[in-house]
Image (cartoon, rainbow, N blue to C red; front, side, top):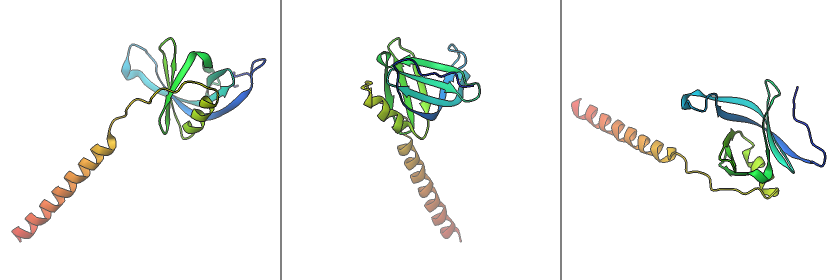
Length: 140
């Protein structure tokens, strides 16, 4: 059973399926886990309910949160310093919902430059293939 309920005077804005990334043990960075659920946005708060248990795992008033977003990830930053990370295909829709409610967007943290690393690896691979081809021609 889903434990999310609209409060008196509250209006739903939207909800999307997301994955919530968190630590089972705050003191152990290797205890990362993921819960599937719904991120719900109302005109007053943002909430996460887990699919498996229906539990309301996060419930934050909009005036106590900012966010940063990338293409498929969103991090909610509370004024107390806690962060909630979500990923999903509809993050852009959630971003638009939050912006429409005047929630402050922070600059997204710079990611790992995977594109540059992949291009460098591809270049090394091509050079190695060409070198092997030339050596095989010379030896035969």
